[in-house]
Length: 140
Image (cartoon, rainbow, N blue to C red; front, top):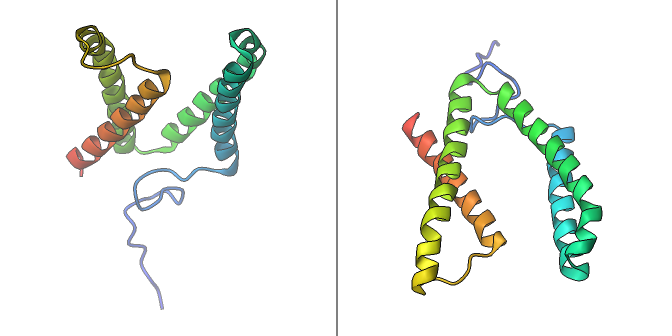
């Protein structure tokens, strides 16, 4: 009995959600970036800013490795998925840019307190996810 392949993807590496599956090395690169950033934050909190200069090369190296990994993932995607990723990142960058402009006005008026770096990172994640979902909905 012959069974036809009914998947929409011509690539065996693409999942049903339209995103590329990550290989083990890519997961290690992303994990290394997360771990070195967390370690640098812990060193800064425990020992101060002066001790952070010893962690900085590891963070930069893992960041470059992370960017290389993300570019490899995006290069394996088809043109539509690349456009969706690009729009999501653009939406995230625009959201952070506008937040950087508008937030000081709310801070000076006393409506909001000072913005913490973790809050800005969380906003970036929220904006990128929102941009990704909006682009996926638009191109479905």
